[in-house]
Length: 327
Image (cartoon, rainbow, N blue to C red):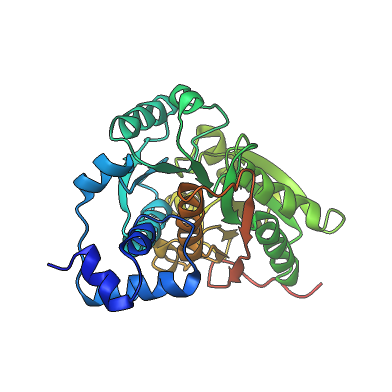
């Protein structure tokens, strides 16, 4: 089995330099860092993580706390985080908080017991879990911004505007909203961007707030039945949209012949339901990779507090929006 000395000899650098690279310390030049990593891979080097942890106090494990693994968006996000982390020699400990603040608190406590070096977190809501207040580890938020934390997310404002522009292009001027939970900035930005994009051209016929888990409340079901002349329903995410399509079908209402629907996220199901869902695609792979990159920077001692990285989104036109004519 290859050792640190073997790598140092092959590259022509000191053992200390190799050690610094393998432990993600920042005091190594980019060229030497790349050479060391390349040779370590070629030689099949496998570090003794237990020995490293005892020597450095670092486990090279990161926590990933997500709110709901039954929502297909989050397993895809977890896969993106894990793939990038593994390529950097990091282990991911996954926690499903099951949409509960106490689930988040339990998850953070468990990750602290396992001495992870940092945590990537998608919050359930605006409250701060108690263990986080005393957590002496870097935290990077993903998908759902909160003040005081570095965060990676999509351009929700851009997504809302793209949906509004598409609605007008397809001739829809009276709209019903199945907004996501407005205590989350991600849901609030999507909703507000759509509503404010063309305030004189699009009329909001009704609005009901629904959780991102897609479970339709009695108020939501009532609004879908009545519809109040809305020709388009804009849902806060794809799960809400798909639930609405299914509920309307049970009521004998055809999408898009009787009413059109859009979603947000572009989960895998969006292309499998009937009709195929028009939605906003988030670059989930890039978001997950960037969150790990920021975490690695924090673990290396760099200060990234309050840094916000925002990725553009794209409209995906499918079959769930009917063309009513040009305006």
